[in-house]
Image 1 (spheres, rainbow, N blue to C red):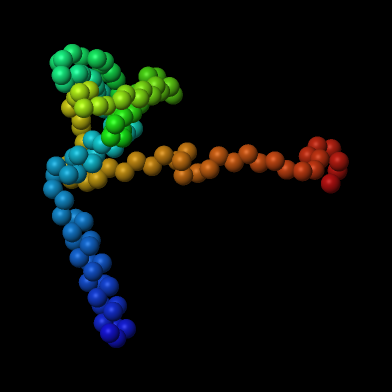
Image 2: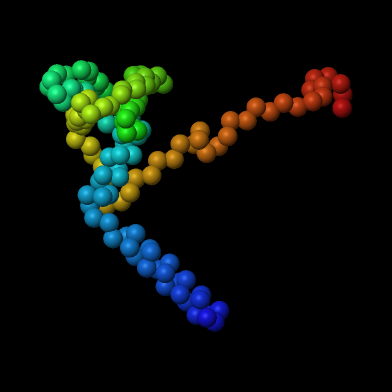
Length: 139
């Protein structure tokens, strides 16, 4: 294949990928945006754990919580105050399961993805230490 043909093929593939990326439906975009809000503790949830054999409720957790289902374990992290969080680990089995309910409607855009940058994660926290006398040596 000649160089110009390869370049043209790469350009066509890039344009096709961008076109397909723009072809998401409203539900996919809303799902992404609600997930982003939940991961940033903006969604009130109720998580109920129950025994599927006895139909007994085992535990309920409510609050601005993010869920991480690891298969046999569910991790629930809830924001309890401005800078405080609680993390619970709950074992799941063939008879213990959970239901998570969003308690309030989310006001998210159906037309564009939401991306949240946290500057403290991008800009490193650097402690600067210098050598030498800073005060009064006249240099």
